[in-house]
Amino acid sequence: MPVFPAALSRHCRAIMQAALDHPQPVEPGGRQRPGEYISIGSFTNLAADVKAFAIWLDAHGISDFREVTDVVLDLIEDFQARVRAQGHTPLVAQALAEQISELKEKLAGTATALAAERATTAILRKIVAELDLELHAARDGSGPVPIASLPARRRRPASGS
Image (cartoon, rainbow, N blue to C red):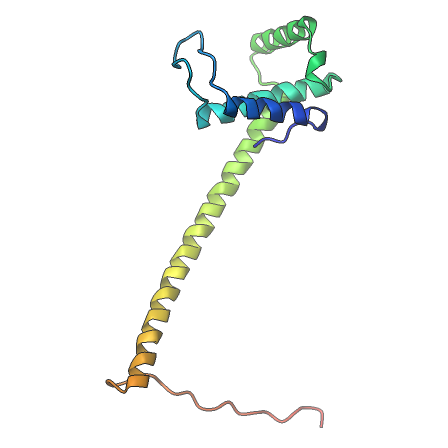
């Protein structure tokens, strides 16, 4: 879940909670049936949009959604139009894209580490099972026990005496 600007955090979390608790309105494109709840993919997209909006508001000194007026919304639409006209990504979007890229790299590294740990765990499970069988065979005396005994450890005299 994204971390929202501190001043708008409660507002943003309320929006996200409402998105989970209430059916979504039907989009103009009509991809959604009336009364449907938000899907997980749409929820993450909504969270990113709310975060970007909150960051923009915070950067413009707005700390409460009640302060958002038609004038502010017009400013946002003008900003979006200028961005589209320039053909480049705004800094906020670039920062979010970089965070996503970093998180994907971390996830890939974590997945690789998890796969290695699972392989190690599988080997250890086999070793434990074999040792358990050998232990039961040794206790029962039910067959040859291919356990090699190790000699007792020799104690070295303490140095410095």
